[in-house]
Length: 89
Image (cartoon, rainbow, N blue to C red; front, side):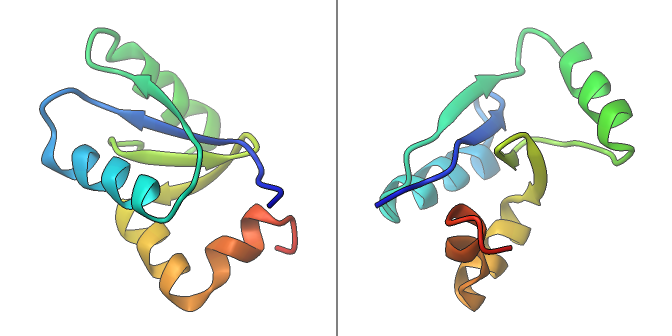
């Protein structure tokens, strides 16, 4: 199965980040984790770049901002996340 690049911006000791990682793994997606625990300026830079407040967990697909875990879960339930990963959105 072809899959676009998924990047998850995460923090250590965050229950929401743990749930996002578990969800993506359970669904069989491969993804890269960027830990923002030691570099909080990274979140500020991301927020400035996409002109939206970024709080971990935050997911990008092929360098496009998708959203937080709730957005991804809703996209998955509607079938939109698979379409996004196949390049159909």
